[in-house]
Length: 400
Image (cartoon, rainbow, N blue to C red; front, side, top):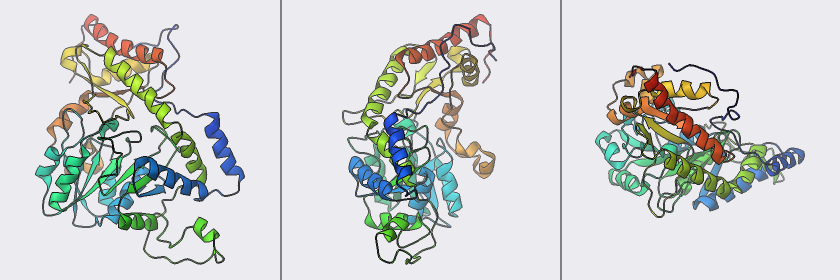
């Protein structure tokens, strides 16, 4: 492994991510805290209508996490015991966990080498008589040609759900996630393009799906506290189904509402930083950005920026690079450990996903966030490129 400490004259440590919280964000939350209503109320209602309009969908239901949105979406689409759900292994484990919690079986499909997202071609071989639904994710927030996947699902009579955790700000041929599918769950987690610290939102064009998600998000109650508060009998409600507890609180909704007002600013900055990284890694042997080609109506959200490290060409492994950068004050991450590799998923260890298996040991996510400076991005890229020279000077043996 490379060792050493950051030089005394090194720039300020660069984290993998730092949220951009403005005084306006803080003021909106403080205002919400002062008004005396802290659970789901007027701010949640405004968030839902605002997000639905921005995304171009009929319905939006604020929830306490993207994971909750996925779980409730699967319930609304009728997924249960005996069903199979096709999804990528190269993704965060949340969706697969939701499938298993409902008594269904995850079927892991491979991803495209260019996008590292699943596609109609990687999904179709896994469709069987037991397939109830697909869950697809846009790797790093890159558009994946969702129309083709939706068409495949429709031909086979399969429900289609998007794990849009990385997709706030993304446009796939001009459309947000959830416009063409049966539904999409977005994340407002701390590292996402806009944040409520914890939280998410489920969107859909389908009235039936929206009603089921909304009911299940709050214990199956017929009316939430805010709606009951507007009536003469606020204590009265029915329990229409056996639901969950997944509603979002007003102060968190206030924060993400303020952040949504800055989305274009955030997105423009992410675009510029990603273009800079792409330029800095041009013709660098063994460091390949995961930067799929975009069409004229596409927009990448750049929720994170990933590169592939080829140890045969660089002389060092992805894990070596992580340690080398960490010793010099630069934070990184890995997206993702394939789900079928976790001990809880030992029964799925034999998943036939060769592209995923080749990609995972090479994937490294670099710092990218709206308040990151151009100089910091240049420093990250230069430091990573230097690892090749250091490895060669050290006569390092490649560990694969």
